[in-house]
Image (cartoon, rainbow over all chains, first blue to last red; front, side, top):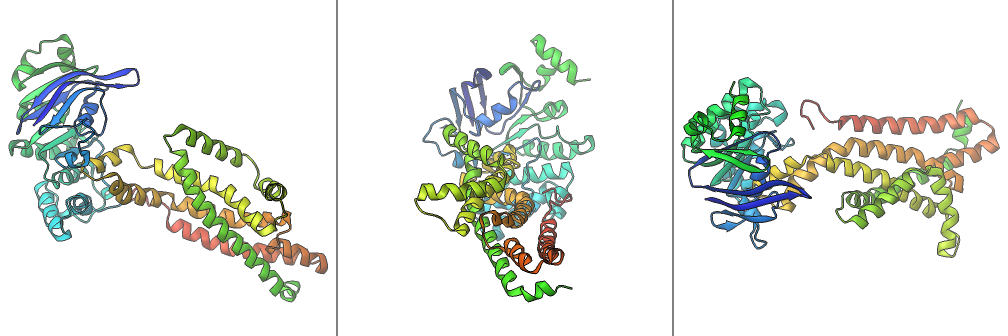
Length: 241
Length: 216
């Protein structure tokens, strides 16, 4: 589904990603963790072409992201993305946030898009918030609307960029529950997160990144039980209290 | 008590009409040129950015009255013939106000976060769809109060055009005062006219203040 080959990226002289290799198969959930500034978010943005990279290749469904002839707008319809700070459109209701892209990009009718949006709101547990504006929703509710907005385009992959780090502790679970449902329902997911409980439960693979490199990768249990590198051990000891 | 005002009302109102016309053209032109200035200030092309930034910094650090004055005396040299006060004042105002409107537009544009724009792109929306449905509505809503305030300031500042002899309200009042010698009531009348119109404008502006509960 997603193939990253020897991908490197620089901001000026500063190398943010260095020779990233990774294959994510359909239906897999990959959790990416690592200290801040390690390049995790940038990696996600390179996968859907929000950020350019200078070397290597990223293929989504066999289509090269960096190929100038690739229609990135079309490619991004296949890849839903959820952001740390929700990034809902403040001038639109929850329902309008969800239906905008299906109506404008997929040219669905207002009724059809609205019906689908209501289904999605029910799925993320807030069907009663359809006509609320983002500012009147809690963080957890906003993030669930953001997930519904991404799902409305019927993507084949969902990417999450630290989806729970801006949330109050009591709201983290309601968002993670939606994500666990998605993962178990067979969605291909790339999740940047430090929620190790979540990783343990649904991750097919966990990747540890530091200074733009993939330091270690493993399946859930082996990653936690016997991390190979010192840096991974050190990192895990800090986040698993 | 407003006897001198009543006696000269048609003459004064004709002056107020000049004030209104000057404000109208100054705003239409100032906002139009301001859009270009705003775009120039966010341009990635260095030469556009630096040229526009130079223009903005130059004009914003000169008093308006000097721009009006200077332009009135320089234009004849450039055009080769004397220029009437009205077109000269209109052009001065457009050049001056465009820098302020441009900065308001730039700030409104930059208030929309990069991540919000990326969120729109990530749903597959194109550049134009994102600009039309996300960027412009949000930026416009956020800058509207400042735009209204700056328009009120422009309206008040039109009286400065009296220095080049433009017969707007203040200039005409001072001419009437020369004959009637009723300074307090005459200029009091001008103050009342400006106060009422500006106060109404500020009420409109407050109506569009960013509502905290909606956060934008």
